[in-house]
Image (tube, rainbow, N blue to C red):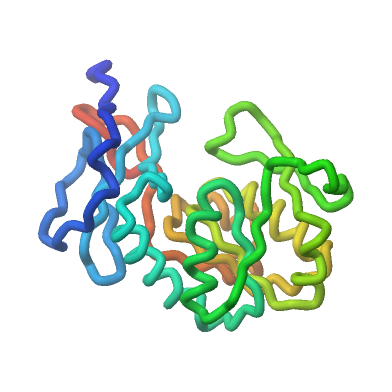
Length: 228
């Protein structure tokens, strides 16, 4: 098996949505062709987690504005049936999507959670999280005390860029319920594998919606292939 790293710059990724006919067969070396609801293709760069495993990456705040708009439009359609009162955006990349989703639903505002602790924040309005993209370990997620009244007793929809391990989503979901929200679901652009379903549990997992699916990948000769 080759020791080639199969990595390349991501500058040209996420800048356009390709016709449905542009699907490269596996194994893939550098990019994975994710299929959108209208059957068109968004090519995502593959990033190795270790020598044998990889994921395809979506960095939504590096995407072309037109691509972000189209992905957000798909996600609005997925979220609308949940009829949420409030959209809550998760940092970091979920904050690029949450205001667009809120606007698409006719909301005047959304509520952001954040990793940065302002001096007026309270530790009681925080929770520890970890994720597949946070190799340095746990960090704290905060809710501004001034925005608690916007959430308490309301039907809340969480918005993030992706769900993968499910750790960040479960911690955020439990935290918002403890604040006094009725979390009706979560909307993401990318569903990455299925490990998150076991972490969330059947009830919560059934309330997650997404725009496209993206498998976890394993190393094979000449590239990467689906590992689940």
